[in-house]
Image 1 (cartoon, rainbow, N blue to C red):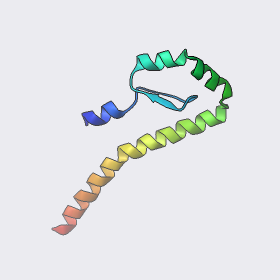
Image 2: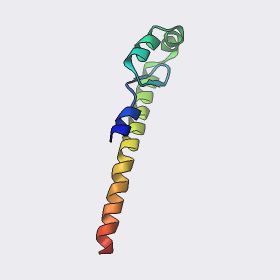
Image 3: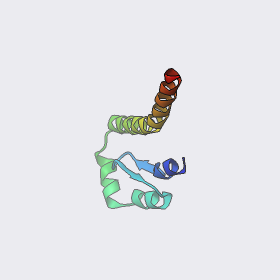
Length: 80
């Protein structure tokens, strides 16, 4: 459980499509030249799509362990 928490990024930059494990690094990134250029290039709809894709990816990662545990549980019940 603790391993999973540490692998979840602190923040995700929708403009640059990068994730950051520490808030201080993310905050520093926000003031950088590359980030500012990326902000000017991005379109609002693209940002929403990227955010939804990111959330779906994280949800899938989270649910994969739960689904696997459920499969094992059901198979053990059926084997009895």
